[in-house]
Image (cartoon, rainbow, N blue to C red; front, side, top):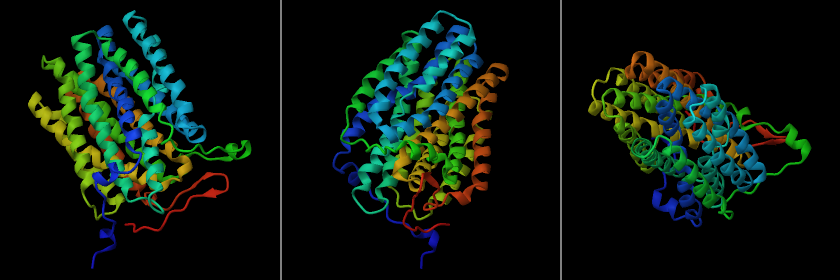
Length: 429
């Protein structure tokens, strides 16, 4: 007889998921619209390092962008839940394109660093939250197929992770090629142009958008954030560690390839890391898992911490590529399981906000990692920068173990006045 740990529903396949009526209407525009996000950080690092000669300064400017995004994106997600995605997205993409253009102009004018920091704030604050919006559309579409939580949601989470990582295979390579082969500002210029084009394509897809959950003034004042749910807070802390891997890898790989005399290969090496993440996401979403999501999340973070361990000792580019591949293989299981859990922990009225908290946590962790790794790379070389992913994942794992009791689907807090979300009972560990 199988143990409670081994009793979970069979995971549906990608064919069934992508055969769901109406999904292609937001999947394709969503892919186009999220591509610029994969180019933003590395483009900022390459432009600012070119104009200042310092990876520390470049990382700090990119970090300000990430912090601004992490602080502002949950508010944008909450507004999207209340007023609709299009109402938030249309002005957001215009403001973001204008902010990036201003950052480019100021960077090329060699203004003082504090001016670049100031310009980085609106650049990050206006980053379109396409990923959370697409995930929210998946949840709405799949909820109509079966009572309760659809078994396709884990497959959808895996598909979204694969899509995200596919953009991170293309984005850094494209940004690096533009910045090193065309002009140091070309990556950011392309990012702004793609934001306008892709964001507009996604915004016009109104039929698949979630219905806004409008509230009266009194209930709006009393409504609580999705962050009031303990499980969401635990996942936010865990996702800071994933951000530390992304940020630390980006800066340290860039510094390592420059030290090795092959700066143009930074996008390729990072692309290997992202491609491994994507491959792991494809496999993870296709497997029928018999362990509970909580155990899978803890196992994924343990594997990620172990994979990051040898990075600081790497001596050659081929070895870095292999280690980057191994680290990438460990990222997707953590991301997919986290997004699957957060959907099970929150009610539909707070989905977009909840997803943006996780996205914002990754951005915040990435911002901190970019800053620290950049300073370490400047002072002690790329090897020192590689200690950042290891430290971030170990700290996240320790915190996640301490907060694991909150990662139980079905135990959710109040997110709106007088409304307590309930889910069907599920087996827990």
